[in-house]
Length: 321
Image (cartoon, rainbow, N blue to C red):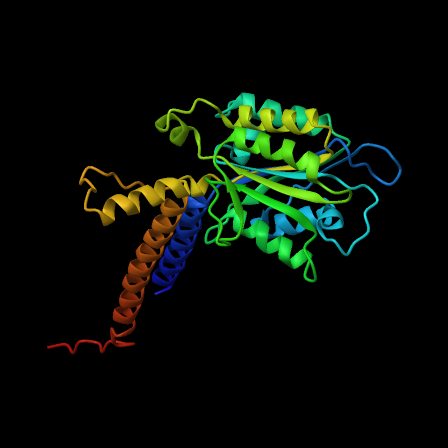
């Protein structure tokens, strides 16, 4: 009986370790975020650089940007500004993972080097290497929600602009189609912007695969460099945030096109459906849970059967004939 109990305990330990191993292998990857500004400085006038190695959610990242990054100081009109900026740039990429930044062999070394140069050359910089990608809400919507929470009374952003590739629920947000439209908008705002006003400009990348299908050769690195160069040439003070969100790889335009084709009856049966990292994580987690339940039922059934065996505690000695 003791051997049976030891075997049951060993089986439970094995199932627990197997479930943890299954979940650990399928855990979603984290993404990096970088915040920098060549115009903001610390109180003592020295370079301010910091790296937060904690694994945080995308919502906590937005909160840190508004608090530690100081964005609430110039995006909220009720707060006095000591170091105002003219433009707050946000780049939402679809390429980088945290492993790409820490490893020498990454998917886009040119983009990593560009972000590293912009980060290290700035007077103020914050790095968040491990951000858990949002599962239910996109980064651009979290940014707008964080802006409303940071400025509950009055949002001091004089002009908010998003790219068409960003999926935002607020229909009143102005959207621009391409990078040249952003450049023209920044030049126009330089002439009309009042002193102390700050513009929020958000550019969402559609990913290298979407760009190649649309015939666009401009990469994330080139878009970042061109937009930053355009702001610097206009003489505007800026602060910038780059955050990767690869799990929402499909752009809003692609989704709209697919729905439109489906509504017209033009959808073809050749359309392939894929499974992203989040899909693989959920399917592997469900698989591990189902396997664990099956083994647990087998274990319980075996224990019940063993407990139901009624054997005599002693045997009578046979009588001599």
